[in-house]
Length: 221
Image (cartoon, rainbow, N blue to C red; front, side, top):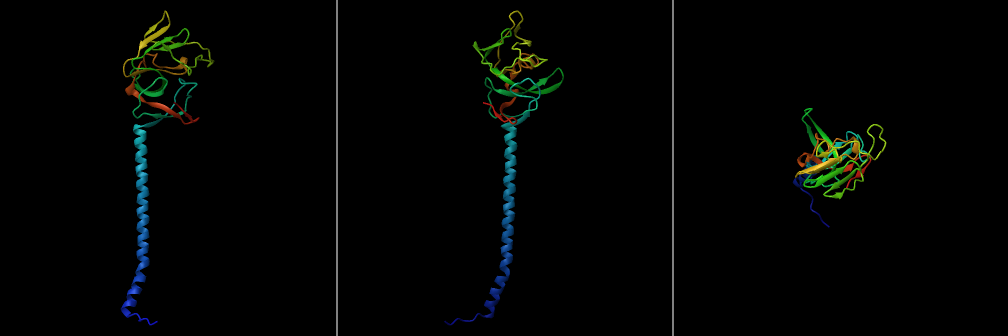
């Protein structure tokens, strides 16, 4: 089969094409690598942004400071809080912000919600019974310890500083609207809504609900 020989021009074109192809291929590879790196960086930047938004408006991290929530929480444990569109409910463990005007300082406290706005709370310090809207509160998480020895006594050593009748040793009050009544699980070693410095907690001061303890790992309902 006869085949026409290549002319010099055709040969030159093929040689030039073959000479240029590796450079073009290398440039394309370099461009793809650069584009890939930009894609990774963009994804990383968006991920960081999403995490910042999440922890600014939806989730928060905090550390327990003190003994007021024993035996549920202990000093130094870390909590994850949910704050986005949160509405407090009875039995929630919450973290809230408190301004101490006496000492010109601000505190962050963790307590349990006993009652919410509009509910009537009654605490009988003789027998430790808590009633909310006339019904006995299932106080399963409360621990009544001696403040000095940590021995469980089952006796209230602390009472209340407001709405308190010393004759009957009873606290009785209706929680104001948009507020909550809170107590620490370690009833005899907790500064909470029984104290005038804390009182009824405004919902606007709530930073969030504890949904997770990091160590030991525990999910709260």
